[in-house]
Image 1 (tube, rainbow, N blue to C red):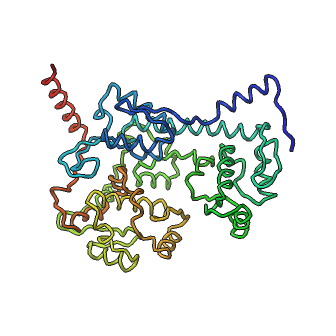
Image 2: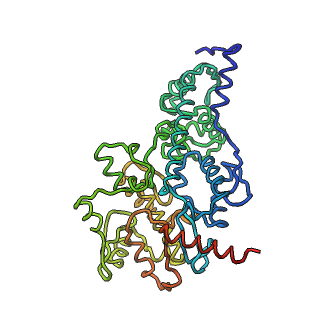
Image 3: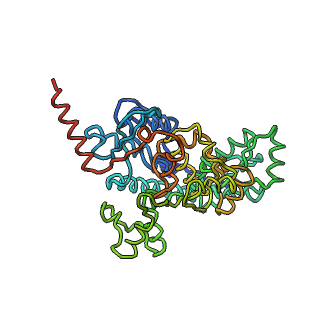
Length: 442
């Protein structure tokens, strides 16, 4: 494996292309409404928290947004000349951002139900995919690569595929096939950094010295990266081709998958994008879970597919089957926090992730067995579920959310959540504020 040296114009072009393809870091992002500036990606969480606490703005499905920096820069320009009400869903909640009670506090939700936002997210997704494919092609053909092995003193020169092949053949370290990987240099640097910290690449346990670490990885078969760690998602090319937003109606997505029709053919037009078929069967299914006042709701268990008509029966089931007293573990939480807990647990189970340790599984049966054996049928750490995104139901018509206030002695008037999302109401609010400003203009 010999290194092919670039010289003259050819070498300069290679260096220029590599510089262009390198991911940009430490991007300065200005707040959408004020002059505060955040440095991404380090200040990402602080920026999102500022938008919620100071400006009452929640961005839906923010984890699924490709190129979040470009997304925020786009809306920062839009909101320089427009108010939130013109693009966002307006909500009225009876609480302040810190959780304390207040009447009719206005909040805003920016999501892809707006055609302009949907088109932006899709365009950024395609842009990120194109950049990843360009980088992938460069890494497959570039012969200027040179790096010392992670485990021995050998310096491998030539293709990155040669380096990955050396790791597998000489040290039995399986990172991935070259045709499936992208941003290989960053991946190798991250693995090298973990090994220098005496951290196991798979289970991420820390050991006292390098020989003990190598022996552990050999005996346990841990000479591979953990596929359940989301930090490694960016290095696998398949993760850049997710074209179906999670915010699409799940029923429509399942029907599309069964029919074999790609979601890429869906129109961005709002009415067409969320249109339902005008068949009797669909009309019946849309109303099949409706119950009039006084009729029992179907309530689904948090940790399995079991359902009950009465909340007391569901509580008994969760205590007997999952050893969890939901009222006891949430007794110190207010109504809004309980809503966040339910939606967080729903999402974890839907993504086949453990609620407590965040370990991911391929099948629900394996996840359920793990949570029972490890006594992980809980509500998780507060830092994981106490986020604005979990104000919104993760599954449609969640019966458990309907009985949360009935399960406690909370005052209904103090904890009721009212969401007003009609465009007409939002426009009325905007017009009223404009008139008020005109009356007090000096």
